[in-house]
Image (cartoon, rainbow, N blue to C red; front, side):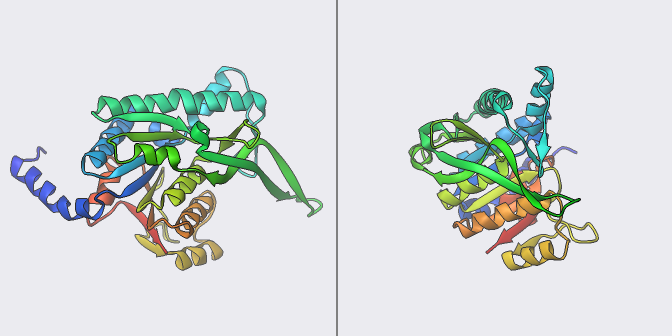
Amino acid sequence: MAVTPYQQARILAEALPYMQRYDEAIVVVKYGGHAMGQEQLARDFARDIVLLEQTAINPVVVHGGGPQIEAMLKRVGVQSQFAAGLRITDQATLEIVEMVLAGTINKQMVGYINEAGGKAVGLCGKDGNMVIAKKLTRTVVDPDSAIEKVIDLGFVGEPDKVDTGVLMQILGREIIPVLAPVAAAPDGGTFNVNADTFAGAIAGALKAKRFLLLTDVPGVLDKSKQLIKELSVDEARRLIADGTIAGGMIPKVETCIDALDRGVEGVVILDGKVPHAVLLELFTELGAGTLIHA
């Protein structure tokens, strides 16, 4: 059904208070690899990010790329191995990860934003020593012996230091930074970093007003699989403890809590496959996911 000019004008007028709420604010958006797999969704997302910048918001995009990395590894015949839910990144895998994340996907998203009328620049955590990572270690319990053992994940890191200098030179100048979750090692090498964790560290360092975590589910669900619209940190921790928040949602919520601890005002987990999810969340009363706040 076509929207009349009157309806368009009313929608814009109703969005005004929300635009004013985020005027000059920093909003970090983590865009997941699964949602990026659909070209039209990616182009719509790019238009929405340009619209944010046009309304005097300072968006920072952090993208993932798990499915795309997996596809490239298969193409070149590199076998993926996983432990504790994370990809074991040896030297051969690291080269592919860096090529796909900081190269192909990053420049594709930059291209979509520029095509939509924005001015995007593609960066990764190594640029300007933006993110220095340390080696990530994970322990698992052997089911037979019940003994804990440390898993060597190779070149997988977690953010240790974040320098926002490069980003602060960019933000407020009509330029949209698009960041790949590849970080520098203290010795000048490279670490592969989980995109959610990377984005949370960036949001925390920037003291962002909002950190939007786009994923492939509607948000945090209760035991009857209904969306929970809002959670405090204490409530989120209780839901983890009682098993309501489980599986892959646990590290996402923990990333959100960590970002809030670092100074982010509010974090939202929402479905990146919903058209214009970012605009629904920021510019309407309904929102589009689960808001977690301190």
